[in-house]
Image (cartoon, rainbow, N blue to C red; front, side, top):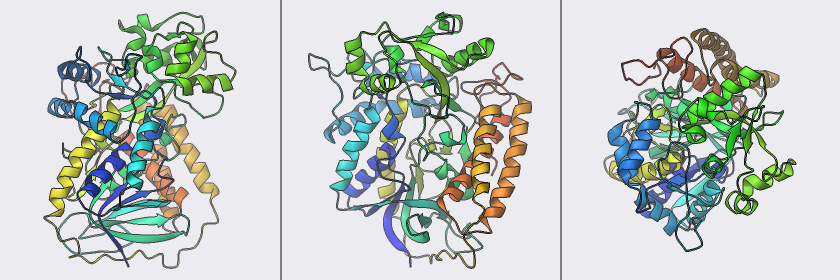
Length: 532
């Protein structure tokens, strides 16, 4: 027996919550499916802020120019203009929903500046912007009678006719999304959900790397689901490594916001030298790809495990007021930001590619929508401009919500028969050590061979290893009952393969993709598409 909703939203970050609210306010029945607690999302960890033109000294054309420059030739300029044009109205909606952006003493909105921006245009809530937005949206969700939130449900695969891509099941009808299967992780059972439309808002893929600023939920689930359903995925090679994550000896990587450099912090090598002037005229406020490669180069030249972020030029009271979360984190680890420098290293942070969509958040599969980090709209091109991601998420959620309401008027949701999931005689696994081992190998392989600086040989080695892991995990998948760790690892391996596939296609260095064998840019501007 399947459960029915007009729309199913997979994910509970800013994109999914904004979309759900818009659709529910139009009277449609919405389910939000999230594999953890609803507050656990990439949005919740976003420190810096949300970029939009709200100052009289700024304009959209300046924001467009900065975005195109950061995107290194691969931005879709019409998409950039449309999304950034919608920015101010989307900010106002967030304010109306209760987001209290930080203000100056005279009542004006406090605007930060980050790498690649020519103007101060980053609205923020101190250094916990994402968390503040998440809380405001979750409060609105709780007050909506048309939204049901299903926590601890792992969306596994989309149901699409004529062949449901699951264990030989099939269903007839026009080619569109019919619903999805989801694992109830508390009960260990798979449930069938019917829907008129599905939105993927599952966030990024950071967990395929050994070191990442992303939470542990960022395993690429939405991209993997879409790809298995035959949906176009593109530009997966463009992984943004945040330049300044707090260095520790384990794999934990706490983000030190780029906004700290916007307020005057300086990167220094182990000799105490401010080195960024050697790499870019914008110095410490160069775009993230340039800063990350510069840090990587400095570390390799010296053999150091980190570089320093010097915050001693920022007044203590300003640091505590503007970056209370970062200040507290440093203090807990014995660092006084007014007299000590912070050890920082790059870490995998954001995916600029993903499920290809148009400006209505529509994918190549009818009824399937995607927005947020899981999607590729063309806004970011080869490198995301700082703080454009939260803006894109809310703008595209609003655009997608309008589109889905029109789509639902044109489909008969109940016309196709949906087969229930069947576990058959599959048994519980007694070899979970395989999952742990393969999980670690994926992360190490991607970090060592598909990192900030790449070569063709490293990419080919990575492809060979990931193919081996793919065979192993698929054999495991078909012999045991599904469980959350198995599903996550299966998705991680597939997404890692897509990243490698796209990286091998790009025989040039552009934006976030830097290949020592092809150090120059090609004259041909093209997107990379993961082979279907």
